[in-house]
Figure 1 (spheres, rainbow over the protein chains, first blue to last red):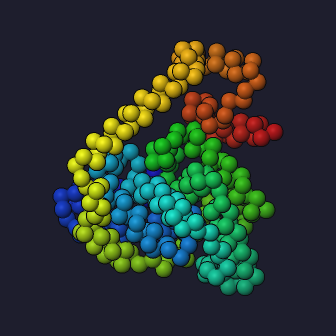
Figure 2: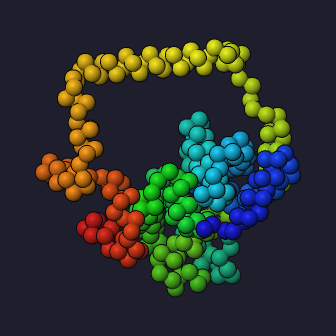
Figure 3: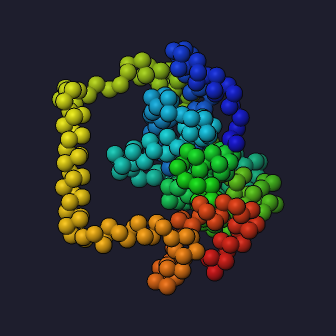
Length: 178
Length: 136
Protein backbone atom coordinates (compact mmCIF):
# COMPACT_ATOMS: atom_id res chain seq x y z
CA UNK A 1 0.00 0.00 0.00
CA UNK A 2 1.19 3.51 -0.69
CA UNK A 3 2.53 5.66 2.11
CA UNK A 4 0.11 5.23 4.99
CA UNK A 5 -2.13 8.18 5.51
CA UNK A 6 -5.18 5.92 5.31
CA UNK A 7 -6.84 6.44 8.69
CA UNK A 8 -6.43 10.16 8.70
CA UNK A 9 -7.52 10.30 5.07
CA UNK A 10 -10.74 8.46 5.85
CA UNK A 11 -11.46 10.74 8.80
CA UNK A 12 -10.68 13.85 6.79
CA UNK A 13 -12.89 12.71 3.93
CA UNK A 14 -15.80 12.12 6.29
CA UNK A 15 -15.23 15.49 7.93
CA UNK A 16 -15.07 17.25 4.57
CA UNK A 17 -18.27 15.56 3.46
CA UNK A 18 -19.90 16.86 6.65
CA UNK A 19 -18.98 20.34 5.48
CA UNK A 20 -15.70 20.96 7.30
CA UNK A 21 -13.68 22.93 4.79
CA UNK A 22 -10.53 22.70 6.89
CA UNK A 23 -10.54 18.93 6.47
CA UNK A 24 -10.38 19.38 2.70
CA UNK A 25 -7.49 21.80 3.06
CA UNK A 26 -5.64 19.29 5.22
CA UNK A 27 -6.12 16.56 2.62
CA UNK A 28 -4.67 18.89 -0.01
CA UNK A 29 -1.68 19.75 2.18
CA UNK A 30 -0.98 16.08 2.92
CA UNK A 31 -0.97 14.93 -0.70
CA UNK A 32 0.20 17.92 -2.73
CA UNK A 33 3.87 16.95 -2.78
CA UNK A 34 3.28 13.32 -3.80
CA UNK A 35 0.82 14.35 -6.48
CA UNK A 36 3.14 17.04 -7.82
CA UNK A 37 6.04 14.57 -8.01
CA UNK A 38 3.84 12.09 -9.87
CA UNK A 39 2.62 14.69 -12.36
CA UNK A 40 6.06 16.20 -12.90
CA UNK A 41 7.54 12.76 -13.59
CA UNK A 42 4.65 11.98 -15.92
CA UNK A 43 5.58 15.00 -18.02
CA UNK A 44 3.65 17.97 -16.63
CA UNK A 45 5.49 21.12 -17.55
CA UNK A 46 5.33 24.63 -16.22
CA UNK A 47 1.62 24.28 -15.44
CA UNK A 48 2.37 21.78 -12.70
CA UNK A 49 0.70 23.75 -9.89
CA UNK A 50 -2.40 24.42 -12.00
CA UNK A 51 -2.59 20.73 -12.77
CA UNK A 52 -2.29 19.84 -9.09
CA UNK A 53 -5.13 22.23 -8.31
CA UNK A 54 -7.28 20.83 -11.11
CA UNK A 55 -6.67 17.28 -9.87
CA UNK A 56 -7.76 18.11 -6.32
CA UNK A 57 -10.76 20.03 -7.61
CA UNK A 58 -11.89 17.03 -9.67
CA UNK A 59 -11.21 14.67 -6.77
CA UNK A 60 -13.38 16.65 -4.34
CA UNK A 61 -16.15 16.96 -6.89
CA UNK A 62 -16.34 13.19 -7.23
CA UNK A 63 -15.38 12.19 -3.73
CA UNK A 64 -18.72 10.43 -3.27
CA UNK A 65 -17.47 7.94 -5.88
CA UNK A 66 -14.36 7.08 -3.87
CA UNK A 67 -14.94 3.55 -2.60
CA UNK A 68 -11.79 3.10 -0.56
CA UNK A 69 -10.60 0.05 -2.53
CA UNK A 70 -7.33 1.93 -3.01
CA UNK A 71 -5.69 4.60 -0.93
CA UNK A 72 -6.89 8.17 -1.44
CA UNK A 73 -3.42 9.04 -2.73
CA UNK A 74 -3.35 6.36 -5.43
CA UNK A 75 -6.90 7.31 -6.45
CA UNK A 76 -5.70 10.90 -6.69
CA UNK A 77 -2.85 9.87 -9.01
CA UNK A 78 -5.32 8.26 -11.41
CA UNK A 79 -7.38 11.47 -11.48
CA UNK A 80 -4.17 13.44 -12.00
CA UNK A 81 -3.25 11.25 -14.94
CA UNK A 82 -6.61 12.01 -16.55
CA UNK A 83 -6.19 15.72 -15.87
CA UNK A 84 -2.75 15.63 -17.49
CA UNK A 85 -4.15 13.84 -20.52
CA UNK A 86 -6.93 16.43 -20.86
CA UNK A 87 -4.49 19.29 -20.48
CA UNK A 88 -2.20 17.87 -23.15
CA UNK A 89 -5.09 17.35 -25.49
CA UNK A 90 -6.26 20.90 -24.88
CA UNK A 91 -2.91 22.54 -25.35
CA UNK A 92 -1.24 19.94 -27.53
CA UNK A 93 1.67 20.51 -25.21
CA UNK A 94 5.08 19.10 -25.84
CA UNK A 95 6.90 17.46 -22.94
CA UNK A 96 9.37 19.98 -21.65
CA UNK A 97 13.00 19.01 -21.69
CA UNK A 98 14.65 19.13 -18.30
CA UNK A 99 17.68 21.16 -19.31
CA UNK A 100 16.72 24.12 -17.15
CA UNK A 101 15.40 22.18 -14.23
CA UNK A 102 17.39 21.77 -11.06
CA UNK A 103 18.08 18.23 -10.00
CA UNK A 104 18.84 17.07 -6.48
CA UNK A 105 22.45 17.38 -5.44
CA UNK A 106 24.20 14.02 -5.81
CA UNK A 107 26.92 14.81 -3.30
CA UNK A 108 30.16 16.70 -3.17
CA UNK A 109 31.74 15.04 -6.22
CA UNK A 110 31.01 17.33 -9.18
CA UNK A 111 31.53 14.52 -11.68
CA UNK A 112 29.14 12.14 -9.89
CA UNK A 113 26.69 14.99 -9.48
CA UNK A 114 26.76 15.74 -13.20
CA UNK A 115 26.31 12.07 -14.08
CA UNK A 116 23.42 11.72 -11.65
CA UNK A 117 21.74 14.84 -12.98
CA UNK A 118 22.09 13.61 -16.53
CA UNK A 119 20.72 10.19 -15.60
CA UNK A 120 17.65 11.63 -13.87
CA UNK A 121 17.04 13.95 -16.79
CA UNK A 122 17.15 11.09 -19.30
CA UNK A 123 15.06 8.84 -17.09
CA UNK A 124 12.37 11.47 -16.61
CA UNK A 125 12.27 12.14 -20.35
CA UNK A 126 11.87 8.42 -21.01
CA UNK A 127 9.17 7.97 -18.36
CA UNK A 128 7.17 10.79 -19.92
CA UNK A 129 7.20 9.02 -23.28
CA UNK A 130 6.04 5.64 -22.01
CA UNK A 131 2.54 4.50 -23.01
CA UNK A 132 0.16 5.97 -20.46
CA UNK A 133 -0.67 2.73 -18.63
CA UNK A 134 2.98 1.73 -18.38
CA UNK A 135 3.90 5.19 -17.14
CA UNK A 136 1.13 5.33 -14.54
CA UNK A 137 1.73 1.81 -13.23
CA UNK A 138 5.46 2.40 -13.03
CA UNK A 139 5.17 5.72 -11.19
CA UNK A 140 2.43 4.54 -8.85
CA UNK A 141 4.52 1.54 -7.88
CA UNK A 142 8.15 2.67 -8.07
CA UNK A 143 7.72 6.31 -7.10
CA UNK A 144 4.67 6.19 -4.84
CA UNK A 145 5.01 2.68 -3.41
CA UNK A 146 1.48 1.54 -4.21
CA UNK A 147 0.77 -2.18 -4.49
CA UNK A 148 -0.57 -3.87 -7.60
CA UNK A 149 -4.04 -4.43 -6.18
CA UNK A 150 -4.74 -0.76 -5.61
CA UNK A 151 -3.03 0.25 -8.86
CA UNK A 152 -5.25 -2.17 -10.76
CA UNK A 153 -8.27 -0.87 -8.88
CA UNK A 154 -7.76 2.81 -9.73
CA UNK A 155 -6.65 2.19 -13.31
CA UNK A 156 -9.53 -0.16 -14.05
CA UNK A 157 -7.36 -3.10 -14.99
CA UNK A 158 -6.38 -6.47 -13.54
CA UNK A 159 -3.48 -7.16 -11.20
CA UNK A 160 -1.84 -9.35 -13.84
CA UNK A 161 -2.11 -6.68 -16.50
CA UNK A 162 -0.68 -4.08 -14.10
CA UNK A 163 2.32 -6.35 -13.49
CA UNK A 164 2.88 -6.77 -17.20
CA UNK A 165 2.71 -3.00 -17.74
CA UNK A 166 5.25 -2.55 -14.95
CA UNK A 167 7.54 -5.17 -16.43
CA UNK A 168 7.47 -3.51 -19.85
CA UNK A 169 8.13 -0.08 -18.35
CA UNK A 170 11.08 -1.36 -16.30
CA UNK A 171 12.53 -3.12 -19.31
CA UNK A 172 12.46 0.08 -21.33
CA UNK A 173 13.71 2.29 -18.53
CA UNK A 174 16.58 -0.03 -17.65
CA UNK A 175 18.01 0.76 -21.06
CA UNK A 176 18.48 4.36 -19.88
CA UNK A 177 20.69 3.13 -17.03
CA UNK A 178 22.93 1.06 -19.29
CA UNK B 1 26.13 7.16 -4.72
CA UNK B 2 25.04 3.95 -3.06
CA UNK B 3 22.61 3.26 -5.90
CA UNK B 4 25.58 2.50 -8.15
CA UNK B 5 26.21 -0.75 -6.24
CA UNK B 6 22.64 -2.05 -6.50
CA UNK B 7 21.10 -4.15 -9.22
CA UNK B 8 19.53 -2.22 -12.10
CA UNK B 9 15.94 -2.65 -10.91
CA UNK B 10 16.68 -1.41 -7.40
CA UNK B 11 18.65 1.43 -8.85
CA UNK B 12 15.77 2.30 -11.15
CA UNK B 13 13.31 2.31 -8.25
CA UNK B 14 15.64 4.48 -6.22
CA UNK B 15 15.87 6.98 -9.05
CA UNK B 16 12.11 6.79 -9.67
CA UNK B 17 11.46 7.94 -6.09
CA UNK B 18 13.45 11.08 -6.86
CA UNK B 19 11.76 11.89 -10.15
CA UNK B 20 9.84 15.14 -10.08
CA UNK B 21 11.06 16.05 -6.59
CA UNK B 22 12.59 19.35 -7.59
CA UNK B 23 9.60 20.49 -9.61
CA UNK B 24 7.28 19.45 -6.77
CA UNK B 25 9.29 21.52 -4.31
CA UNK B 26 8.09 24.59 -6.17
CA UNK B 27 4.43 23.76 -5.55
CA UNK B 28 3.15 25.33 -2.35
CA UNK B 29 0.60 23.03 -0.62
CA UNK B 30 -0.91 25.95 1.29
CA UNK B 31 -1.45 27.94 -1.89
CA UNK B 32 -2.97 24.90 -3.61
CA UNK B 33 -5.29 24.26 -0.65
CA UNK B 34 -6.47 27.86 -0.68
CA UNK B 35 -7.08 27.84 -4.45
CA UNK B 36 -8.93 24.51 -4.40
CA UNK B 37 -11.23 25.42 -1.51
CA UNK B 38 -11.95 28.82 -3.07
CA UNK B 39 -12.85 27.14 -6.34
CA UNK B 40 -15.04 24.57 -4.60
CA UNK B 41 -16.80 27.36 -2.70
CA UNK B 42 -17.73 28.99 -5.99
CA UNK B 43 -19.43 25.75 -7.00
CA UNK B 44 -19.69 24.22 -10.45
CA UNK B 45 -19.02 26.35 -13.48
CA UNK B 46 -22.29 27.78 -14.78
CA UNK B 47 -23.36 26.16 -17.99
CA UNK B 48 -24.91 27.92 -20.97
CA UNK B 49 -28.65 28.67 -20.49
CA UNK B 50 -29.68 26.20 -23.17
CA UNK B 51 -27.78 23.41 -21.44
CA UNK B 52 -29.69 24.14 -18.23
CA UNK B 53 -33.07 23.82 -19.94
CA UNK B 54 -35.04 20.90 -18.41
CA UNK B 55 -35.86 19.44 -21.83
CA UNK B 56 -32.20 19.07 -22.87
CA UNK B 57 -31.57 15.71 -21.10
CA UNK B 58 -34.84 14.32 -22.48
CA UNK B 59 -33.96 15.42 -26.01
CA UNK B 60 -30.46 13.94 -25.64
CA UNK B 61 -31.86 10.60 -24.43
CA UNK B 62 -34.42 10.50 -27.27
CA UNK B 63 -31.69 11.20 -29.83
CA UNK B 64 -29.53 8.44 -28.38
CA UNK B 65 -32.36 5.89 -28.47
CA UNK B 66 -33.18 6.88 -32.04
CA UNK B 67 -29.55 6.63 -33.14
CA UNK B 68 -29.09 3.23 -31.48
CA UNK B 69 -32.30 1.95 -33.04
CA UNK B 70 -31.35 3.07 -36.51
CA UNK B 71 -27.79 1.80 -36.11
CA UNK B 72 -28.96 -1.58 -34.84
CA UNK B 73 -31.44 -1.97 -37.67
CA UNK B 74 -28.76 -1.12 -40.23
CA UNK B 75 -26.40 -3.66 -38.64
CA UNK B 76 -29.03 -6.40 -38.80
CA UNK B 77 -29.86 -5.51 -42.38
CA UNK B 78 -26.20 -5.75 -43.46
CA UNK B 79 -25.12 -8.83 -41.57
CA UNK B 80 -28.30 -10.79 -41.12
CA UNK B 81 -28.92 -13.26 -38.31
CA UNK B 82 -25.65 -15.17 -38.82
CA UNK B 83 -23.62 -12.02 -38.10
CA UNK B 84 -25.29 -11.73 -34.73
CA UNK B 85 -24.88 -15.39 -33.86
CA UNK B 86 -21.05 -15.44 -33.90
CA UNK B 87 -20.33 -13.63 -30.62
CA UNK B 88 -22.83 -15.80 -28.80
CA UNK B 89 -21.10 -18.97 -29.97
CA UNK B 90 -17.65 -17.66 -29.08
CA UNK B 91 -18.88 -16.62 -25.68
CA UNK B 92 -19.98 -20.18 -24.96
CA UNK B 93 -16.53 -21.69 -25.61
CA UNK B 94 -14.33 -22.86 -22.77
CA UNK B 95 -10.88 -21.26 -22.51
CA UNK B 96 -9.20 -24.34 -24.00
CA UNK B 97 -11.68 -24.50 -26.86
CA UNK B 98 -11.19 -20.83 -27.61
CA UNK B 99 -7.42 -21.29 -27.64
CA UNK B 100 -7.78 -24.23 -30.04
CA UNK B 101 -9.93 -22.17 -32.37
CA UNK B 102 -7.52 -19.26 -32.26
CA UNK B 103 -4.56 -21.59 -32.85
CA UNK B 104 -6.25 -23.17 -35.83
CA UNK B 105 -6.88 -19.74 -37.26
CA UNK B 106 -3.30 -18.65 -36.42
CA UNK B 107 -4.69 -15.71 -34.50
CA UNK B 108 -2.37 -14.55 -31.78
CA UNK B 109 -4.35 -13.78 -28.66
CA UNK B 110 -3.30 -10.39 -27.32
CA UNK B 111 -1.32 -10.67 -24.10
CA UNK B 112 -3.61 -8.17 -22.42
CA UNK B 113 -6.60 -10.50 -22.84
CA UNK B 114 -4.82 -13.49 -21.35
CA UNK B 115 -3.32 -11.62 -18.47
CA UNK B 116 -6.24 -11.35 -16.03
CA UNK B 117 -6.72 -15.10 -15.89
CA UNK B 118 -3.26 -16.55 -16.45
CA UNK B 119 -0.76 -14.24 -14.81
CA UNK B 120 -2.62 -13.35 -11.67
CA UNK B 121 -1.52 -16.48 -9.90
CA UNK B 122 2.14 -16.38 -10.91
CA UNK B 123 4.79 -15.25 -8.49
CA UNK B 124 7.47 -12.73 -9.44
CA UNK B 125 10.04 -15.28 -10.64
CA UNK B 126 7.48 -17.23 -12.70
CA UNK B 127 6.20 -14.04 -14.24
CA UNK B 128 9.67 -12.80 -15.10
CA UNK B 129 10.59 -16.17 -16.65
CA UNK B 130 7.39 -16.20 -18.70
CA UNK B 131 7.84 -12.65 -19.96
CA UNK B 132 11.45 -13.31 -20.87
CA UNK B 133 10.40 -16.42 -22.79
CA UNK B 134 7.75 -14.40 -24.64
CA UNK B 135 10.33 -11.83 -25.61
CA UNK B 136 12.51 -14.58 -27.07
